[in-house]
Each structure stands twice: as structure tokens, then as C-alpha cells.
Image 1 (cartoon, helix red, strand yellow):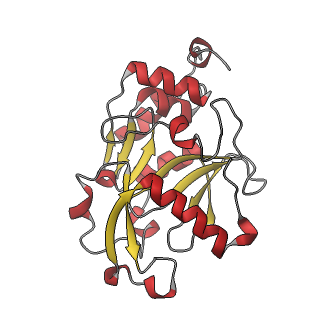
Image 2 (spheres, helix red, strand yellow):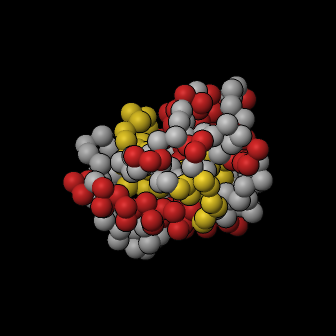
Length: 230
């Protein structure tokens, strides 16, 4: 385990670049307040340097809310997004802090979609982002690295990306949504009956509960692509 001093000693931190992207963002981006003590703990537990974009986001934000909190990028944790990257992955992709995961969960959204960095679980395109889509329960490649993913969240066409996953009044429900809760739908969005989200009923559940449920269902629906939890 590298010390916090080693992880923050880079002469070329990535955070100034993220700030440049923030200044020209086309989407609504909210940087959640960072607590220095939590930031140090979160960075140490994640064992990533501030030289990397991931480390910079962890160390300099409590998390990032996109489109009023529709999409949540994990940082070091805050009141509105009470999960750090390392804490969220413990028990899901790692057993203990410092473990090398085969994939790392770094963001999620209000409809039960999860974003992860590939470290071998999904194929040879290492460090690329995959999306566990709630309407297929398959890990879909985005062909973006983590930095490119952050840039996409800031300025990409999210309406196009989420076509079919946003109901007509979605923005009225998101503004005050707890970042550790997500919507579960009936019929399930991945079922034949759940293809029209306007006809589905919504229920708020914890994001933890929804992730575990989706992983179980994924094993049933896509046994050829099972990713075992540690």
C-alpha cells in the first residue's frame, strides 16, 4: 500500500485538466463538496495517484452529479453521495482495500445502470469503461477510457445515450434524489414487458440493493458473461 504522501506527490496532477473540462461543460455538472479527511482516506483506500483522473476526482470531490444527479460519479463521499470509490467496491469487486479488482465500479445512474473500469473482467480492452445497462443487464463497452468518460459526462449527448431510459417527467424526480438510491421498475426494463418505460411503475430502492439484484439477475439472463463477486 502506497502512503497518502506518495499518492499525492505527483508534479502533474490531473485535477486542473478536469477543471478545464468543467469550465466548458455543456451538461449540468455539480461538484460535491470535498472533506479533506475523507478525501485522504478514500484515496489511500483506492490506492490511485492524483496523477490519474480517477485519483484526482476522488481526492478533489465528494462526487460529481450530472444532470441534477441523474448520473453520479463517485469521489470521496459526501452528504448527497455517501459512497467513496473504494468503499463502494468493497464486497463487490474487492474483498479488502488494496486488492486488485478485475473491474472497478466508478459511477451509476438513477435507473440502475452501473459504470465500471475494465481491469480484465470484460476483455482485453483494459482501463476502458463498461456500462451494465438496466434494459439488457449486459456489460456494454463504451469504448472510452475513464478520462474520456468524464469528458463525455460533461459535454456528451446524454439524452441520446439514455434514449428509452428516461420517462417524460424524469427531471421532476431527480433534483432531490439521494445519490445512494435508484429507481427500480416493474415490469423490469430488461423484460419483454418493460420496453416502454412510460408504462412502468417506479420504486425507489437503495443503489446497493439494486446492484446486487441486477448481478443476480444477470447470472440468470447472461450466464456466458458471469462476473463473480469476491
